[in-house]
Image 1 (cartoon, rainbow, N blue to C red):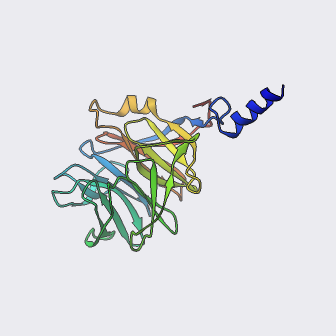
Image 2: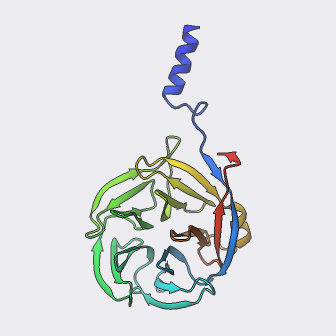
Image 3: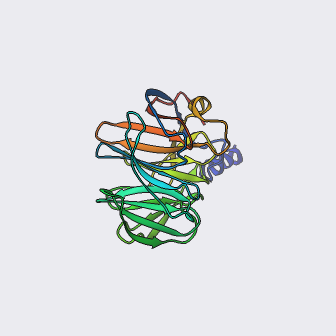
Length: 257
């Protein structure tokens, strides 16, 4: 009896999967559907002051653009130099900050006219960006999120992202939503809801049915792109080369991971 009780204590204390807390999985319902440029290899998405901003990737095709939500029309756009593969974007003040994939360089742009104002450097790859009121958060394709100074983009620390103690790799596009970091996980149909303080995944959003319906046939046309309208509590999602952008509401968990 004593040995069995000791074994039970050790299993619980070490987080054995048999006793680990299961991570909630959230469903969704589509509230509205909008046109989206199927030529846009979406890397970043922002809703800001009633406007939708998007960054697109691929060499010689990378852009930052303002898009009209209702019909998907590109209202204005700036192209990155052809050698760069564009990645995520985030707003800070009157600027948009953008990353490139493997060139270890990012750019700052005036939001009003898309004029480039500065460049900055970072080690490794650049994937996604988001922010809170004090920091910028950056993904690099690993299971870590970098915390950056928004004025200098200098790295302050890193957050290790885990689900039940296991690293969650391939973190991609990021969005700050009600105190959590939402993250696309590359080549999957799920969005991770991450506690920025602990790095723990608090829940998963399962968009597999939406991906099956909306994604074109290409292997590269994965779910990627999250934007949140804080004023109206609206959540938008899309994917690379998708012809549609969706507003969704999250449903309470009906099953566990």
